[in-house]
Length: 436
Ligand code: UDP
Image (cartoon, rainbow, N blue to C red; front, top):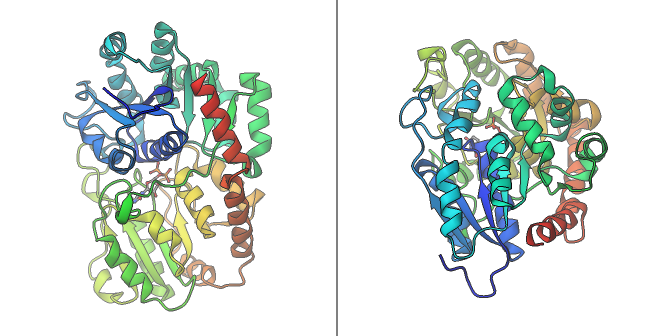
């Protein structure tokens, strides 16, 4: 277990295995490694692939600590990632990983230069904070949700289920909180969290975190290989001559749409005549969630829209798509990472919030910043195809006020992460805290 020469403080990173959690924590870890820290990341075998860009860039200063995923009865055997499960399984995944407490404790005891701090996902807080205090080191809580939602949840602990109440309470009591957000976007809410909950200054907004770039592959490896090679997707976008004319449709790594929802989106895309990329998540196979009803692309749709649109079945190179000059708007579930990626790309959002923090994010982006247009809401709703088609067409107009404001917000986001910017400074302070 040797780190490179002149290695800085050694920390432990413990991620929650959902794409929306592990990807931004990998991005944060990249920033910490750039600032000289050394890192051991706890991971189970099927989640190792998410670390590839980090390992290829930062060896030997980053190491993995691989434990088999502990069997846990409500979870289907072999499942180690939320992508294969509905959101109701979050507590089971967290509790399964909690079974690693003793092996981690023992590993720490035998390590020649054990970690000086734990940086762990908020959803694992109930056991990582205990482990940290048992080992007499601080636990810092990484929170990949939007600040408004978290402040609401902290304020309503008694209305949450016992799993979330425990995790959030432990997170509040941890040494500090790291948000993937930025002051210019959520400064008021961040101050509120400090005043009302943590009662200290150790709340760092370090976002929007930039995706790790791994060598020549660029963003290829983010979250795993794309189901259509990234260069083919980019070549298709390159062939779209007009800037901001392509609509991207994607609902993140968790949501699968029902047959009726798929039909409505397909009809709207076809009726609108806009160019589009539609990322269709693979159905969840391991558990009963509507069985065969998920992710069905209507018969003949792809043939009818050939040339106009690209349907990506499975994993899409989302960040690269959003950043392409041809892409102008994004029909989204308003997952926090997707929202931040769209902000950094200066894209107009068409919001269809589904669950978790999505409704808070929609409020922030539609009502407070005016960069999103509300399109539909709820896991079960079916949009009107003709109305949606009109929204798609309008969203490609260069003069949409939401688009103009999105370009402004992009500038503010870039300023926050630039050297000397608010998020850049917060990262420096976080590194100081982790190294002290
Ligand atoms: N993502 C991707 N390709 C896909 C689906 C998702 O790269 O086909 C990435 C997306 O860019 C984002 C993350 O997965 O970084 C999803 O996180 P988000 O918080 O937006 O939504 P969630 O998946 O947690 O609902």
